[in-house]
Amino acid sequence: MSKPSFEARVPIYPRTVKGRFRKLKTAILLLAYGVYFLLPWLRWDRGSGPDQAVLFDLAGRRFYIFDLVVYAQDIFWLAGLLVIFAMLLFFVTGLAGRVWCGYFCFQTLWSDVFYMVERWIQGERNKRMKLARSPWNANKLIRYGLTWLIWLLISLLTGLAFTLYWGDAPELFMQMITGKAPFAAYATTAFLTATTYVMAGLAREQTCTYMCPYARFQGVMFDSDTLIVAYDEKRGEREKGRHKPSKQLLQRESRVENGVGDCIDCGFCVQVCPVGIDIRKGQQYECISCALCIDACDTIMDSIGYPSGLIRYTSEKELEGGKSNPYSLKNIGYAAVLAITIGALIWSIMTRSDVEVSVRQIRQPLSVLLSDGRVQNRYEIKFNNKTSKPRHYRLSIRGLPEAELDSHWKDDIKLNPEHSIKFQARIKQKPYIAGSNRTDFDFVFTPMGEENAEAVIHHSMFYVPDNKLKKN
Image (spheres, rainbow, N blue to C red):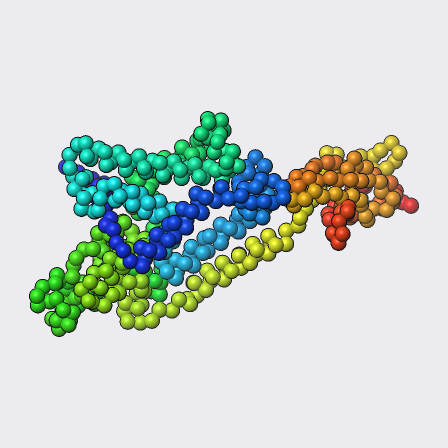
């Protein structure tokens, strides 16, 4: 009989643990859930436009993030944001290992809630294991069914909350429950519901171990100074290894004298691990640095009067008796790129113009000879008002002597808040005045009725065919 190509999954039933890291994880979980589920409902008065604090308006091709409005042409900000996230992940990993996975990852947060529901309905670890091994009966069916139902409800709320970011939340919510929402809203909600249920409820640790690429390449960013969750093998094992407490080996002093390690082999650290590993076997790629094993071990150590820290956040260098140095060239490089990118993104946002002008010369044809002997060039002008106030401008040109500007919008360009207009402008000039087949000039947009407002200037070029040039 051939050997199977993969190992069957061993179900994991994490045990409840109390401690400082469990409290920290719970606080982060509550904060993350509060932000994720409540943010679409937060109102924000901008003076114009939607009053939702965070709204991704695909139809209008703009994102609203509090007072910041991001337009399609600001897509490079997204590239900067992705670079910041990547560098931040690399930098934090170089310093403190996989703390993102253990505390902030969506998979970890949602799995934590699903585990809480499971414990609430099915009981603690031993009861859940016993229930899983028992034959199907009314009790098992009710407990499993209620667990799955609440998981499904949480998954549905997760998908619905995500969808509400893409429309006015109160209006879209009413459309969803009355069957009047667009198909895309239902499809998105259904997809997020299914993936949340499968990942957090069924796949769980397999998502981190087999699906997430971070588990595979994060080791490249580790070095001997990186903080990791580690078992102090020298203290825990000593010369004669672990030993359960006995009458002769109960006090720590007697264990030290007999060369027996402080680890009493209770298995609590393994029982609380959400990915099912034994931290005492050394660093393993499955470990997500959630530190629940630290809480478990410290609880046992405190209860028997031993010093805590047998399992702790430390580095390989410290375990070997040295001192960690977080200021490695790699970490400094990550920090430098991160700081530069954050600074550049902030500078770009702070210096963005309130209005945006683009001028494109129409090149078919590039120029036209009119019946009166003048040469005409045409330009397509797009004017975008990025503010929450109406703006008025007057259009003129400079740098083309005796040229005529012909446009319906030249005298009064009215821009509503967060709106844009597109129009054509024609410039006519006699060839002998141009003197060259290419003449630089500027379109000048002068604000009307605004004190101390600066004109918007856009550089362009006027073309005259070589065979139409005339000497004065």
